[in-house]
Length: 443
Image (cartoon, rainbow, N blue to C red; front, side, top):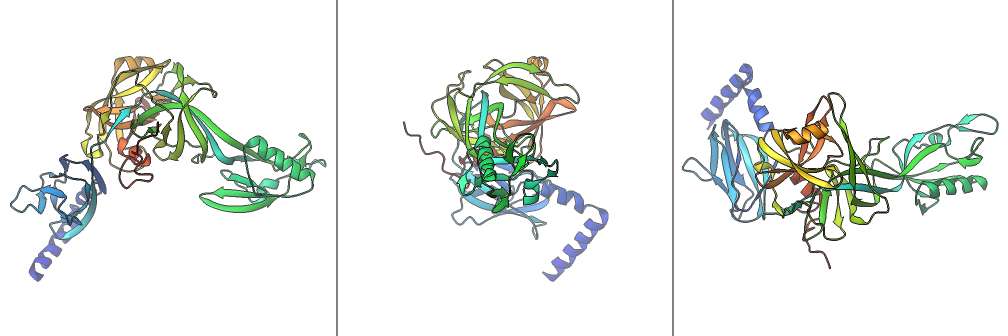
């Protein structure tokens, strides 16, 4: 054993001195820390290095590691891919070791039952009423004497803060907050503000000041209570009504922070026009919807991978498409695919794209690089445009992702998020918040 360790140390020193260790580290970092597969699916890790792989934390023998050699408990020693599968749900760990000795990485493998969801592609209007009111700017107040004072700033408020309560009572919106601040000032009283900042709740006291121009008592703060926009529905789960849309979070346009959802809903929207994208100038869908339109779904969460919620009723697919199996990260590959989206009125279309690169399995909505190849879509939009976010990406008959971003300097190309992240945020996968969201709806 001592002899083996000595030679191993010599080999590592040679690898470091020759720079050969760098590609090994890079290759290991490309291996995802978490892999989800379905029962019966055969998945693989392409290592191309002298890395051995062993199964651990699997007392029932749930995960089967396919080995090219005589020992079924270890595989991957050499450039060949490591393949594995399972006949039943569960969780296990794959232990990656250089030369079978040096620990490099542990990969968690979740095996789940096959999941099918309805693809979206519908144009939707998004209406979000935030919890309380968000501070989007601080301003000076001009007093009767002509002095400029900053009561909100001096009290400790910052841009991005959310005011949830005034004098102990919930804030119902901008008008409600403004009226209560004015009344307190008219009485000569300060106001107690309950504030949320970066997830932390605390209280501040501020003294309203009579503004010479408005002739009202104010704090010198611009606030917002709602956000609206147009996007695309990505998927919905017929049994539970769970849905996901957009593929990226809803953020405040002034502060860049995630909007806290007090109440939210989605409604049907129409695309009235398209501003084509060009080099250096992203295009845009010009959409419209009525705030009074019937609600088709309620928004429950604003997540890093889109908005998640529940449909309020059944939703038909205009293309007559039925539920599609979910394609997990291990099943996505560079190659042809398609997206579903609306570019005229409420008429949905299928358009060809190419998945150019699979970047990895990290959070943030930039897992795939995609390129629009469909001549009709290129003629209409110039490629990917704002409002297309959430358009489902389908490959090999599976729902694999959603459009999220456009490249500013090349609108034919952009990013997509792996659908697996959205499903986790929607509570449709084991181990995710809100699971199981698959309980059937009433009615």
